[in-house]
Picture (cartoon, one colour):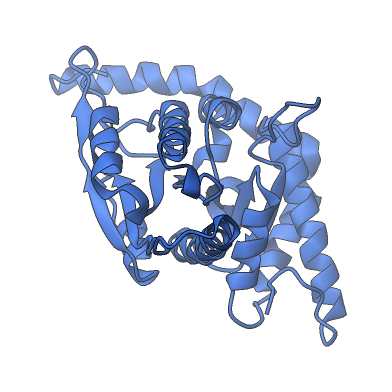
Length: 310
């Protein structure tokens, strides 16, 4: 029942899946610039420390991630209550706080996982017309729903005028809230707390958002990052890479996948990674960064012709 376990009847596919995962993790570490395991006694793990591959699209992968986090939360909360011998009820954790983007997949993923989605408003930056995270609304929702909240979902790849969520500040807010709540109520200090999931669907291509994730994992809480394989690795639609600083989160997600998985998306990804190689992948990312200046200049000209601005 574990998507990453070796399958006795499909030894070749099992080996290919593990090799493909290793190639992907290497690419996002040395190519996209995401950190892996931290060094030193107090160092925190980076976003690409652990990972798993799922043979479904980004939206369905998000639903599986939330389901895995719910199962993990229930077990850890039960263990904490038993360990402290308290009579409090186990939190149901059936609410997901979602920083709004005008795209349906993530919202439908929350519903598909059997959870309730609370849409958080965003705010407009008057200087730039950009729309981004409303940290005040997040804090208000955390205080209102408290330990009924399973997770907060933020997004790094959006359509204008929406810009990436302030993932680092959200991560710090969640960590601070969890710690503050535990200090007030010592009996729940070992509970799982509220998780943080990042929808990083297109984000591996962008150095700025990858740096944002590195910082978020350093200063706050990040549990899982969902990345699309087709949007980041030039393969057909139908696969996702889930990465995390926490091995137990990845294990919970992998074990939550029902039955066996199709090898087709992983075969496409394996072939593509071998054909590109690390130099080829880094070359594509470098070309993208080189062309962004030209793209911006051309788009500014088009915007001016319609009375708009960037």
